[in-house]
Length: 627
Image 1 (cartoon, rainbow, N blue to C red):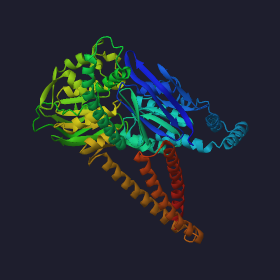
Image 2: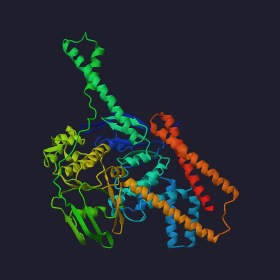
Image 3: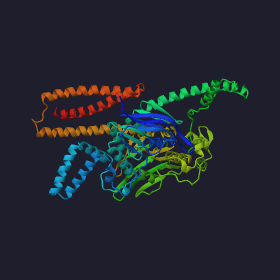
Image 4: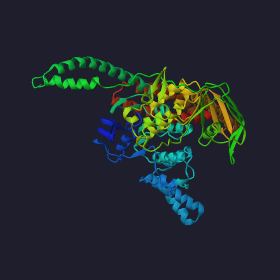
């Protein structure tokens, strides 16, 4: 039977006069990995804060298992700027971490002063490490720090960039041995390489996970259950993102049918209510109560049908933008070197590369915010940029959302009709109440969404989006993707969201570093598949070279014994069987047909197989060298 870690019972929460969720209940058991989906401003962060004890509900309670250790990664983590990375990472009330920290300090002291006293202290510390079996734990810490590029442990937090602080917050949560990890948008401000490592790392951990994320590939890689807050209610789905979309569509269709039936019956019952005299003591009380329940159902709203949305862009001539031998450096760091390209109408280009490889600098060069060191950037006479940056919008204090939009446009073309600014805002999730909210009262995601809409309203014919998916909910991303897919001008997107890139890009500019930009035809998944093939070929060549060297040096040594050959053959069969069982279990988990207890049992077996496969594949590689 699965161990329950945490239970949320009948939680209700409002923000001022705005209700977020009402009477929602759910539990998190050992081994569960759950994604939380909801629109911006509907209480995702508030719910997480309630679960970890940073906020309290208006009604309801959260019950936790005794001694439950929770690791929480908020969207924005505040650190003491004067502390070092090491002080932040190793402050936990965790005996193993304390032993490792002490060992590292003694090693540093011994390297500075290798006397007998420090040697004895080092010997004693090594025994403590053995006693706590801390070596594997230390290796895990080293892996986390290396993959997140946090190597300068004595560097002060105040000297770190925003992206580095995000990685530090992530490392602090991963290093602590929590039973339950709660993440609020963990992939924001991470580059794609780091995201791919993180999803692989979390997938092989046994910890339970609850996370808010807009990254749909990351969601599928890490989680196998989804809970959704929609119209203050909570809905549960056991499966991946595609399964969630399918089942949600079915739910909405059922609700719409119920509402239509209720509307028809409501009209009849309304006539009955109106015909009755004011003194209703003789009326059937059950029928009156039923009428009010029916009225509530009949007036309920479901998601509106998709509205056709297009915007008239500025006229675009034949010449759009041309770069001739453009170079740019900052000191010894080369961003571009003799780069040449001619942009064509309708191109959709994704930009990928490590943090610090020059992506934002490249966009600032295109838009004239900075000048190249050499070369020419020739802009077409009719080219009009729309540039969505990572910087926040700064409106006049006290402005309402609707007034901010009306300053740019009173009416917007949606399909073949002109619609008001209010209808336009509603399409992107700003309902009437929210439209009349003050800007400063919006959530972080709502502010980002508004900034993006204002960029679109400028009617650009060359649209540049720098990390547009940060802080946006999945619903907004789907609408944005639909709009951008039909956009007739040039589109250039910098994003760590691989799903978003795959949906929109025809080809990629891959920033390789040292001024090199590779133009790759295809989307990000195509590029990643090519990179994996190349990496495997390189590993194979490296193994061949190593094998040749070993063969020359030890012609008659290290040959596989008869017993090892038999073991090798058995391993091949066993690995194939485990792969088949793993695929069957994954299909079961994504089917949505399992009961909770069955699902937990299947998930635990899936985790066991993954661990067993990893061990057997390592042994297979060892034996294959001898073969």
